[in-house]
Amino acid sequence: MTELVRIRVEEHLVRLRMGYVAQRLDALLNEAARREPTYLDFLDELLKEEVGPSSASGWRWG
Image: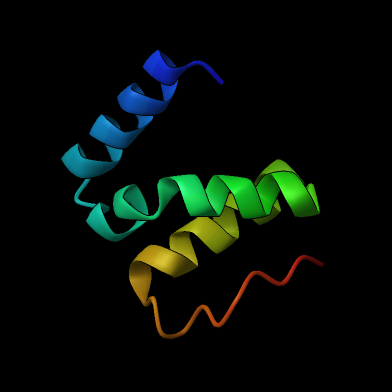
């Protein structure tokens, strides 16, 4: 992913009021790259992070 795309994604997250995920974007992307989840699993975990950071106790891929 280019730096421009990462910045754009972060800006979109902020506009969508997903500030927690925007702040943790690099860490979340690194973890996803390591685990190689499906797109749907990645989105599910990403949204869990935003909805309730304490409820997403780590990334668990199905």
